[in-house]
Image (cartoon, rainbow, N blue to C red; front, side, top):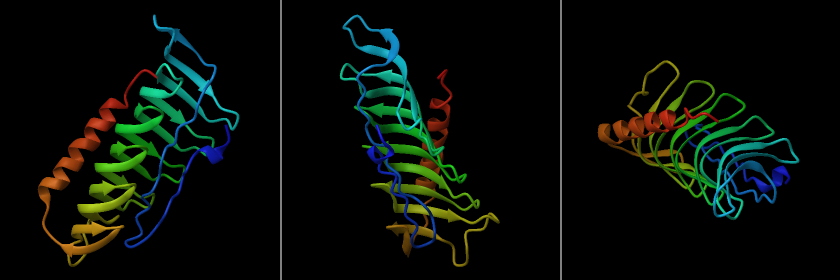
Amino acid sequence: MAMDDYDDDVSTTGVGVTTTARIENQQQHHHQGQQHSSGAVKVGGWRYEDASRYIGEWNQRGQKHGIGHLQLADGTRYDGKFVEGLSQGLGCLWFPDGAKYEGEFLQGWFHGYGIFWRSDGMKYEGEFRGGKIWGLGLLTFQDFTHGFPRNEGFFQDCRLMRKHRCPEVVQRAQKCALMARSQCEHPY
């Protein structure tokens, strides 16, 4: 497998929050691990030709499925849940530059509630859609301020479109990030 099998599209727009990342499927044909009674590998590891590696649970078709740890050759790391080879459910994604995301994923994208930290300390807590900041949320700068006027409200494609207080959305994003972190503390 080559790195081209990953779509690590990272974009910066609007408030300068890097947000788009997608963990793609990589098919395996041979791996080491415990055999399930049905012949499928339940838990095991695989090292790809590009030096990326995965340790975790697999389905009968040889796809990452369940809880796992994926380390890409460029240093990007994902810990969390996979469904049929894609990150889905709760997970944590760390980028080589120090940026990170903790929260919900859907079909390999940030999607749902979560927190994204840029490498410079700026963070966004709120809703994501299709790998982008999209929905209600709160932006916090490196100095722990929220800007003046306050950068809280509805964001579309990483840009604040209209101001709106949304403490319950921020609290839900914090809860999802906490649950993702606790799920990532597994033995792999």
